[in-house]
Length: 91
Length: 434
Ligand SMILES: Cc1cc2nc3c(=O)[nH]c(=O)nc-3n(C[C@H](O)[C@H](O)[C@H](O)COP(=O)(O)OP(=O)(O)OC[C@H]3O[C@@H](n4cnc5c(N)ncnc54)[C@H](O)[C@@H]3O)c2cc1C
Ligand code: SF4
Ligand code: SF4
Image (tube, rainbow over all chains, first blue to last red; front, side, top):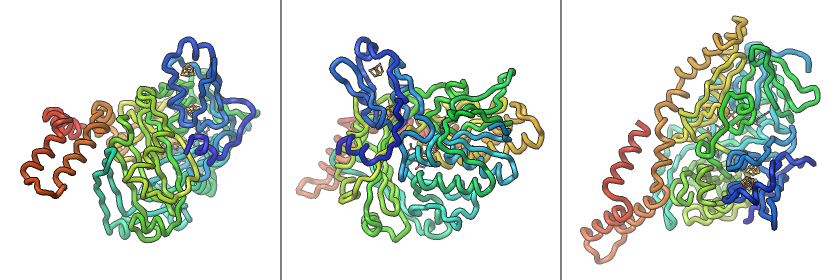
């Protein structure tokens, strides 16, 4: 079962605006050797594209790991607006 | 919202709602602010609540249709290597009788919602879909309310209770707790796997309404400091696995791949066979123990539950520490309301109450446990392998004399761990829980 299949099971109330933002996208490519966000995120929100890191905030499970796991503190991290984001059915 | 409250509580989890119930019961004017669309919509945990802690807040919870999944009658521990498992199981008739509901499973989306309803019935105001974005302070730095992401978003209160859980940008922003470090949290993922009730009853050998918990340690966390679990719900199984966040980054393991591997383990796959995955969730657990607990009181502010890093990893207790701390915070606030003093002078009574309770006593007692796990990587790598091989040697029946088998069993352990290493492991283990 892929992570996409797993996220498909969840319910999200997606806001138009992202609650996650790369502060300086160049840092990701030029200065970040380990790029831990690609591994630690349980929802595979961060993906390595040709020349940048993309942020698929829609599937974020709001755990906070990328915020403290980014060695360059390069992620501007907020909770989604009240009522938006993931919505657990069972928990 | 111009009106002023006695108490504003951030977060409708077990800590916040316990406090709200106790306060509202005694007539205090309380508001709880929750960011989720309904209480529990952002929350997940392994699944075990403790009846006694809940009973201290809602004595007749069972009669009030608390959404209990299963009463836990058996606790198992499984130590897994790649190829097998070594287990321990404890079942007791007492859990059917006088210790019924000592521990039971719940789903947080249902439980937190139910719990918040109890607080509402007592007169507390619970406002959802609202994020608290900052704390309000007066000129002297005293906390006097909260700021929310609503348009008319300021709320004034005599005391604010931070019960916003472990992932708290708010505590960090307001300077009441340092940001969590990757080594002081575990990241866990969980899948809810649906199965018919009778299949669960049969598979786990329980009668309707009763259930089993399995704590899993060993090679399933791929050498990382972590644990996994299988808990029974009425019509589903909670399967989860977590490890220190630092280790995930170091070992480049993806959490969703790790849970997939767990599902394929020969000791786990028969338990979930035929089940349908229904939900996939992720959450942090506090791993820092006693050392990471911040100062619990300030002028106009108290901190409870996961927000204060209260978690006993050895006994998998968090919800009860949250409920107890919420209750003790509420008692302190009631005292402050009586006296009309909301400064540290009166609110420090919370720290005293906490120190007298099992919450801080237990965390202090087990303060070495987090570092024990961190410094003994062999627990998750070579030791399960060695232990399984040793048992395999002992239990293989053929023409080999037992003496030879016993020697090879000992070699299976020793080849991986020197006698001194084994001794140190046992000594450190004993010291960490002494
Ligand atoms: C995988 C896992 C397994 C666990 N297993 C167990 C177990 O079996 N038994 C056990 O006792 N404990 C267990 N725990 C621990 C337990 O879940 C926690 O200790 C407990 O939930 C803490 O309660 P709390 O009220 O302090 O925080 P939470 O339950 O996290 O509640 C915090 C609430 O605050 C809200 N919130 C956060 N920030 C804001 C904001 N800025 N504005 C508005 N609202 C906000 C959140 O949405 C949430 O509803 C487990 C935890 C995990 C992650
Ligand atoms: S870890 Fe931080 S700096 Fe590195 S790639 Fe990810 S977001 Fe960019
Ligand atoms: S908060 Fe958690 S789920 Fe969301 S992007 Fe960050 S790591 Fe991924």
